[in-house]
Amino acid sequence: MPWTRARAVAGVGTLLAVLGVAACGAPATSTGSERTALGSDAAPAAPNVPSSLAPTGVPAASPSAAALVVKHRHAARITPTLSALDPVSTVIATAARRIAVYTAPNGPLLRHFSARTDLDSARTFLVTGAHGADWLQVQLPVRPNGSRGWIRAAAVTTATTPMAIDVDRSAHVLTLLRAGVPVRSFPVAVGAPATPTPKGAFFIDDRLPTLAPYGPYGPYALGLSGHSDVLLTFDGADGVLGIHGTNADWSVGHAVSHGCIRMHNRDVTWLYRRIPLGAAVIVH
Image (cartoon, rainbow, N blue to C red):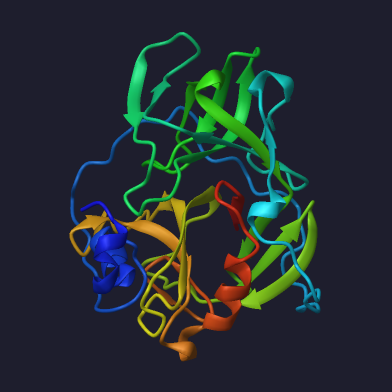
């Protein structure tokens, strides 16, 4: 069910559950639905970046997430990041219309993606490589995690951002990085042993207010490109991962979720204002 502003009265938090964001609520069940094998590369190993530092002070005037993205008019004029885990800057690609993804440059068609996600975010990809000036390799928000494909550079607008997120599951800590330098760290809840938050490199696929700030997803949610390795479905839809607030503050700092990363509502509000679509999220 596509999300529209007209459905805001129902609360986006409800729709997040319908779309399978495995976060809170009643225990979910795993099904035997078949995975879609679209990718060609597994997610690379996580980089050696700090992740468990104590929180630092918040600048008096911090730039918005939009201000932390530098756009390029012509994709051919930049050299995209060769790794999704570059801790200094990340290249992102945003589609203006329905976009075709191919298995290789000039290769067979893999699939199409709409210009907007089901939650009405702009369709954004994390760039992981390039072939000449005409083709970009991108990470895809599909199963299996780490799937990649190729898109035409002319079909997207490219940009760079210094912002990234590092999640240390064992320490239950999320750290915002800017150009590889820790900005601030927060305690988080991660997946329970039976429904762990998967390791790997992901990116911010959705970014939205939930319109139900006191609900199980808190005031804001960041949808990730990754999926649960255990829950093939959640509440009747795919087991999509996310970073969001919570109405169960007691859970923060523990391994209790269905795979999503929960934050205190004040913390996810701070993070939401500083992280753009397409930014890398490294979980280790």
